[in-house]
Length: 206
Image (cartoon, rainbow, N blue to C red):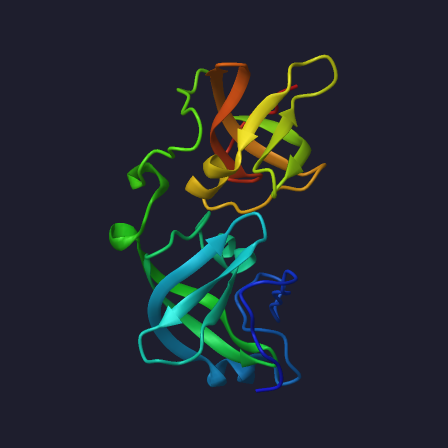
């Protein structure tokens, strides 16, 4: 293989060879390149909705397979939870194996956020709002928290790193939009649930 795949680093590119997204990864061979596809069964190692990608650990001992959010959403999935069973068709890209089609996914073995223990490092709040779209005002991964905003003149909404982790997000960027439900915490509004922008259908907060 030409390059080495890593779990940390820049967001990789996902490409398809047809406008409707039903083809394989881009190549000079076009449609015939799909003949090089490998069907792989495995387990979700991790998936970061914020970064837009994650990795699959194949059952057959092959190297980890890159799973891009574009592939997920094109095939009708919003995210992939750690531990979920998945069957994909993959291609050997220059940077390593990359899934381009999801054949099936079974979340019965997944570590779903609702099944994870409540975080012990901060207060857990009950959501009192509906799902709304907020903008990241500030976030510091080292300090482990940040603030979201619905716009000028509205109160900031506090978000803790542990809440992000519970919902498969490892980082937020200023200006990024996310979907949240929030409630009243000890010192103000706090995020109770957070999803990447585009997850399901949610009205704007404005």
